[in-house]
Image 1: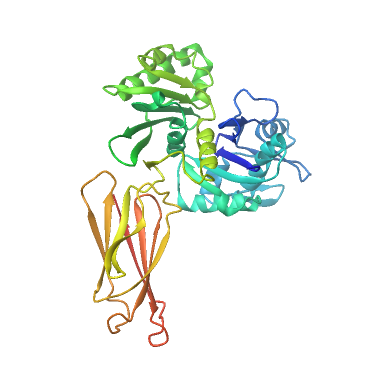
Image 2: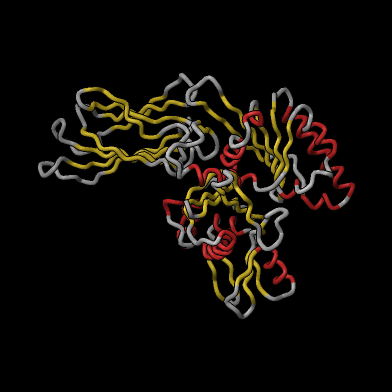
Length: 421
């Protein structure tokens, strides 16, 4: 394994990049310039006036501050809303600006480790929205990263993989994360449901209403106010829970000296870890694991970005009735597209079974086949295509494939959308 194994945490304020090192079996943060203290790379880009020269991060800030160029920030949000920026009379689409930014940060590990090859690249972002994911993968491809090497996780899932890559006593019980950024205060909670095979890991994310601007940390009075808010959050969130560990990340936790009362609550019979690159490191662990023959994570993960139910149907194969799985619980919804062909045998309905993980309750969803051309029994072949627009929204397409030359395919498509548990 000679190529780079990268995890990139892409956010509107700062981005971070980690490279998994197989010799050490650990991710290593990659910084911009000589500042290795945090590895936070501002997600901004600046074009130098009159030149086709682009700068990112703190260099972009400095160039714009002294009037040497035009800066564009919040690149992720700009891509999400399909925006653009006009610089020196030229319109640049958001994805073009993101491409330049991504090319620049990908140069960092290439230069550091002396290789151009990217063997596995895993992005992690706050929210998984289908159109944005399409754009992000297209941008990665335009940076000459092969499509089949690119994957995208939610922050919640990256948190899971980071935590379960640590020693087991760290996540023996529930594990929590507070991420304090310019965007606000985000809370994550993870628990392992034991007694099942494979084991199930559940994690949830919540953006807390109790938040504050990081600017308040510039004054002693503001620090006290922030500490009070954070302590109240901890009292509420940790109450009556058996929590093994608490993780603190985000620019707001570059130092925690301003929050002594909060730390008293957090450290009460719990391990507390503070640092950056948590999400990027989690993505880097996955970048390595995806290339292994056997995963180091034999769990079903239920969280943002993962399907919560197994979707299947029953069909006769070789004279026996068998269950055909179309989507498995714990699968990445963005990548969980399946296609299976069947011959219709004496039925006018397609019945799918939806089984939520960890539940005895089974739902059934049915699709009428009456819209297909009328033919004799066993002379209609159909293709059933299942895809998802998020972890709970499933689309099923039934395509008429006909039956050879006797009954040519019409291409008729029956589409149904379902909300699943």
